Length: 141
Image (tube, rainbow, N blue to C red; front, side, top):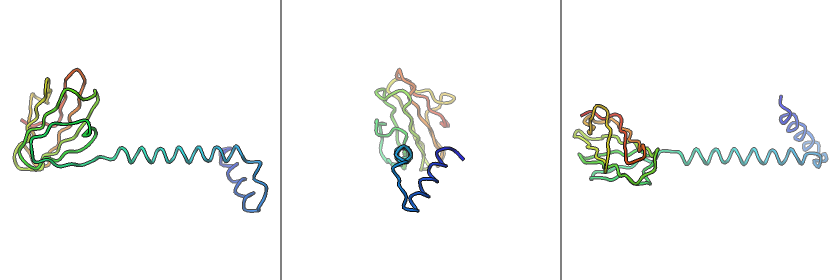
């Protein structure tokens, strides 16, 4: 067992016996730090949950869409603007039998030069590479 684990056990035994806990201030401080760090990690995980939104109209990606999933329910165009940060990523899912068309303000690099999602339930991931360039994977035509 680690030194910290041994100290925690000693502290718990002393507490159970009603003993003097003044000998353990460092342990208590470390315990509080560990609890704070654990809570921070849980909060971070909650912040990283994907938001799923739906659109049935032509849509321009905005900053609030970062690291989210957008489901398209009608044959529409998704525009990828230039003003987002490098590394910005969004996932688009085609939830219709028609096509979802991708456009960009400046440069769109689609696999094979493709710009559309044609198959229902197929997804594409768009990543802003910076310098007004978007890379989109998963496109079909």
